[in-house]
Structures are given as structure tokens and as C-alpha cells.
Length: 467
Ligand code: FAD
Image (tube, rainbow, N blue to C red; front, side, top):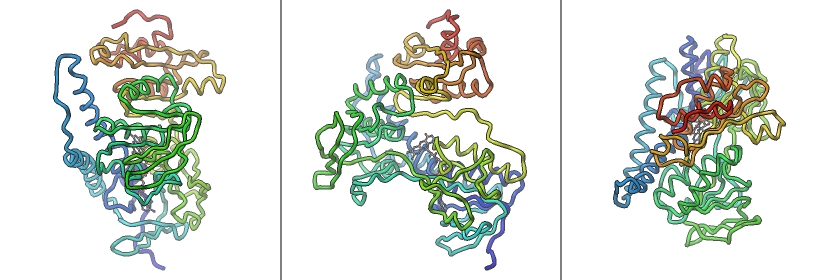
């Protein structure tokens, strides 16, 4: 069968990985086709992930700040939440970005095909869309089909009161009682939003701490704050069953400290994301896919089939947008014939909770487990003038150094804006900075960024300045 469209690069999926790859390919002069099943570009991140969640977290932060402002003599009334207007605001933020992407695709003459793409041979993808079926023949393909929420079995998923993160972001209502199953980043961000909007929130987590993966000391200020705010957190607890009824969803639990079975108005299941690698008929192109749906790649993002690349959530952890975009750019450059490979040493992780938690590189827990010889420099925000002024002294900045070289190899920051602050340490790690490089860098006063310099000075034992 004759192909309907021929191109040099076909990108399958228009999330942060895919649109970055497509735009880079076009910028490098490649004739590029971008295939996306949904009418709007941007994938999970822009449509039902990073962006809408942060828009809602902003509203949550304003509600909380207003509630505490009486501490410095400024009082507001009780917040009046207009859910429709909040939804419009969130959708406007998303729309501005996705429309921007469509414009950028047009400018670059990237041909966008709407429909579901599947491989039919090593050089062909068939795209089934509303306006028919098209066969696209490509020289190179970049698979960027992303991931989707894990639907934990045992929940009545046909009931709209059982939600995944996509459902929770639609903000259908503010449930009186919300259960969040899974205390990872996504679950806790949504718990933060709904709690601020007025829900009574319960979180259950299988592991012995919230946000598994982050150092426990980083998580503690968040856990303490959630407790103060009345969020019930149950660790080492799993759900044992769930059923829908008139009163809501009744959920039972098991584990040492399991709470009694309870009715909830809504349940958010946020227990991880599953890669979409298994849904593309990749075998017809000879591309290897693991049992779980991941697609293995090398340091150039090549699959086992040399002219087919894969990037983003479906190549593995961490499933983060900034990893996907960097991989997308790299794959596009390699496909265009550039000699490039993955060189990033670290990928930062951020939970946009309140306080924010951010970490990068080696964690203390990891260093201990691996027997690495490390030293830690820690700066408590109780000694930061800026943090005191913000009324947020629970935070701290921690840098982890290799004892042999004094180079920074990891960091953890908890407190407002931790996600912005961690970027400096990511750069320091990439550049091989030693403690002195960071400590001797003049940070502006009074900012939270000073805490990074101070943590390095604390490690060196040269700290002179507080407040
Ligand atoms: P995706 O964004 O998943 O995009 C894949 C695209 O491929 C989708 O548009 C899909 O429709 C399309 N597609 C799939 N199969 C086909 C097919 N067969 N044919 C055509 N199209 C197809 N990450 C961060 O870094 N920071 C955050 O703050 C953050 N917050 C998040 C909050 C939530 C609630 C969620 C759910 C995720 C969040 N993430 C965050 C993760 C981030 O969204 C993902 O890591 C990122 O979107 C992955 O990009 P991707 O390009 O690999 O795939």
C-alpha cells in the first residue's frame, strides 16, 4: 500500500517530550510529522498534569496565605470559592499554553496529524483519526506516547466518585470527605489543593513515609504541616476493598495502623503511572517493549531498532516533564545526524506541596545504602531573615558532598520556593562545584537562595553570617 504522507521524522505523541522533539527536528531542517490522539497539543503535562495542578496550587497557596495573614495584622474574611471561576482560570492557563504550542508547530511547518498512531512496519505508522486513516512513512521515528494513571484494581472505576489525577483536576465538586490513596507527589499536591478548598482529606500510603524517594527529614516539615491542617495521614496502610453506595465510596484498609472502614464522598487513586509502550503495536516495527510497557533505550535514546527512538515517561523513571524535554531534544538531534548522547548527571524532583520539597542527585538515604563517604552541610531556615519575614521557618537547605573531593553530589530543600532554589544546586552538580565554589558565590540578601551558600559554608565550617 502506498503511503499517504512521507516524512523524515515522525514523532508519536505530543507531550513535552514529543513536541520538543518535533520542534527541534523541524529547526534542524527535517520534514517532521507530529501525531497526537487528542485535539490539543501538550500531552499530560500541559493538559492534565504539571500545568493545571500548579494553577490550582496557586489558588490553594493564596487561600492559605490569606488565612495566616492575621498573624501580621491583615485579616481577610473566610474564602468564598467559586468553583466555576476557578475551573475557568485553570482552563485558561492550560489553553494559553496549548494554543501557543499549536502556533509554534505552524511556524515551524510541523505537520500535526490528529489520531491514534500504531506501527504497521519498521518504517510506517498508521494514524486513525476522525477524518480517516492515513499511512505515514518515515525515515526516523521518535516514540513519545507517555504514560497514564495506574487504575488500582478493587475500586469501582465506573463510579465517577472514584477518580484518577485527570478526574481530580476537572474539579467536578469539592467533596466533603476525600480519600487520597498514595502519598506520592501527585497525591499530595492534589491533597493540598482539595484541603485548601475545604475538603476533609485522608491520605493512606503503603510505605513508612510520605513521598517515598525523598529523605525523611525533608518530608517531616510537610507531614507536620499537614497534621496541623487536619489532614489525616496513615502510613504503612493499604486499601483492602472499596464499594460504591448511596453515601459515597466505602473503603476498608489493612496494615498495622489501619483506620476503620469509612465512607468518603470521593476517592483519588494516585499510586503511580504506567507507560504506554505496550499499546503501539511496536512489535510490528521490531521495537522491544518490556512486560510493564517501558521501551528500553541507549544513551542516544535509540531503541533496539536503530532508526526508532523513544523518550519521556515511556522510557523509564523519573517520569518528569523536564526529563522528557531533554530526551526529546537529544533524540531529534541524533536522528538529524548529530553526534550527541545523554550527559546530564542529575534530574531534579520537586513536589509543589506546601512547603515545597525538592531534591536532586544523591539523597542521604541513598548515600547510606550505597556506603558512600559523604558529608552534609545543612542550613535551617529559622536562621534566614527572609524565611522569618515570610513566617516560614520550618524549612531547611541541605547539601551533600563527596568527602574525598568536597564536590556537591546531592541536595534537598524544603520550604516555600524549594523547587526554584534546587536549580542552582543542579547546575553546581553539573559543573562539579566544590563546597567553596558555592560558599564563595555571593548570593543576594535577603533571599532564600542564601540558604544554599550557607549550607555549603556550614559544611566547610566557615559559616559567619546568620539572618
Ligand atoms: P505525555 O505527556 O504522557 O504525552 C504523551 C502524548 O502521547 C499524549 O498527549 C497522548 O495522548 C499521546 N499518545 C499516546 N499514545 C498515542 C498514540 N498511539 N497515538 C497518538 N498519540 C498518542 N512532571 C513534572 O516535571 N513536573 C510536574 O509538576 C508534574 N506534575 C504532574 C502532575 C500530574 C497530576 C501528573 C499526572 C503528572 C505530572 N508530571 C509532572 C509528569 C509529567 O506530566 C510527565 O512526566 C510528562 O507529561 C511526560 O511527557 P511525555 O512527553 O513522555 O508524555
